[in-house]
Image (cartoon, rainbow over all chains, first blue to last red; front, side, top):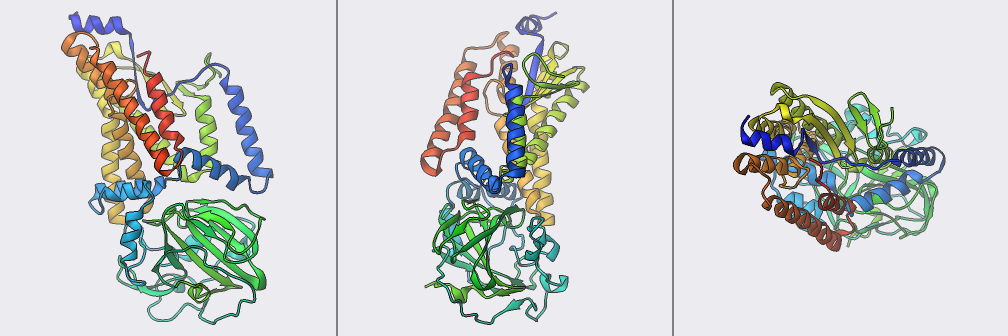
Length: 296
Length: 198
């Protein structure tokens, strides 16, 4: 037996390989199982526990950084589609990304996640509706499939450019640059015309998102498409939608006033940079949101 | 079955209490933390270690999943130093390969989830190649040291310490610029206090 091998044997007969390392001390299991039971019970029976615990966990573990966007940017860089600066942008508030986005035209350039379609753009009805949690079926979008994806020239029937007079105070949810407007645009990936159902307002990561008007937080959730999102129900059947938030600070059932902070700007879901995707709905119609916003 | 140190044991698989809590928090409350993506990438990593170990005549005794990742315990005395290097390198190489494949597939399919999984794999590969004790990079340095000097040279401890301190500094810097980031500081503290027992 050679000397090196003998040395190794003296050093120990086992080697550990790992993707990280796991260690523990005795008697932690009971505490862990109790914690798990408490968490499951909170999710099942305490309204708003989802958002409250989720925000607490993500805030303290991530420091507000958008890891999903950063990791997607890393994958994009490896594929040759992007560069590593985008990773840094996602982790560091993405001010550079915001600047890049501000240079984009209001339509046609838009906000595309790593070459993917913008939410509400070529996403199918089913994908959109997957964002809605059970019990809130009245929020489901009634678009026929052909209208939701790739309409060559007609405006989808569920879109309304009618200007409703909102008989209540309303404010701009977030100050920023409009990076993609409401309406048809040329999808940069497919080259086809398709419809964008909201307005995208670019702003630095973590910027406060205010409630458009007084109302009740109807639904808080997460989807792969819209990331962290919430719906707020206002007077006269008006419903507003806020997508791609880094975190939602409001909880379901909460009463809010115009300008109350309900979420933070993020880049969760299909998005390359921090922005708010904002929609205004009335009944089964989606309205042109910019006519209700003072965008300067 | 419960092990003496408080882990749930299912055959050769052990689930640490920290993992159980993190799993529930991640799956039920914080999908943005990408828990399932990291778990899948870690499983690929360990599978590569196990496959190369088996090819070289080693035997997997136990796979443990904890709050900071997975670890696999092998009977290393069956392995030559070269084989042990191959086993150590297999995990990060598997993640790097999976990352590259997923990145190009994501580009072809325009799939954001695939881009994210590619990023997770690349990050895991890079992290595990850090020259710290307890990670594959540190393990490879240890084996190289044994091969060259028949002992673990003191420089390995210095390298390990500097790596952990650098990570802690990065965590503090991130906290100062973007908000408290417990994950990075947690990993740095684990590295500063861990790595013993190999």
